[in-house]
Image (cartoon, rainbow, N blue to C red):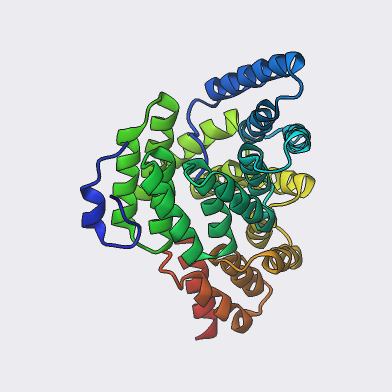
Length: 343
């Protein structure tokens, strides 16, 4: 049995059976999801009182929103999940999971945690329900709670979804060797080209990319799935290769998307701090901090305060950002700048 807490050796002997879903071949994946949505819609025209089908349709639209970056899918997911809950308000684990996934996607992690807990109560042997809860607790900064839910997920189904979440858990604790092994185990258990591509992508992320590799990888991703995350990474790659004007265009587009969609004030804070208005960066960061006090928001607060020339106030937040052992290069860059300004 694989364990979250013990050392690397425990992971090496496992026999395998928020990161999110695979990033490779997004067109293929989106087509499959769209076909699934159409099939469920056809089924519901015949049997409109099928609470399970409504819940599945809602979950499919959450995934379509993630792969297409079309916020209309969130509204469709919400309507489908509400209909499922209207038909079956109690013990509807599928709808509870769908709601948790929807609120995670919308960055309302408190609501996602609450729905995840309801899903786990209704479906105690569901690894997927545990995954919804792991994602919410991780983002809320409840490290102990996330570890418990992750261990339960691994016990139930040590596959791609659980191993990749384990890798992220290790990464946040600075246990990079164990994170790599977890991703390698995930890659071994992948059952489709999309899953394998997802695992390989994050293995390469963990190992680090050269500037040329980053330019090619993120440029390709932006052309297929122009999410704020990929736009920012592509912008950084452009900046490092001497293309500041093109880089700025990516940052501006990412910030425009975030302002329009709302919800992800954390990413907006970091973009504004480096490439926009420092005062706006601090407003974004403070708004996110009122909702969750995680290592992620601590780093955003620290950096936003620093670029507003308030480094003494930034330091306690920077301390919190690395308290678990997180060694993310950007977080360490922020910390070094803050410490340097106080010397």
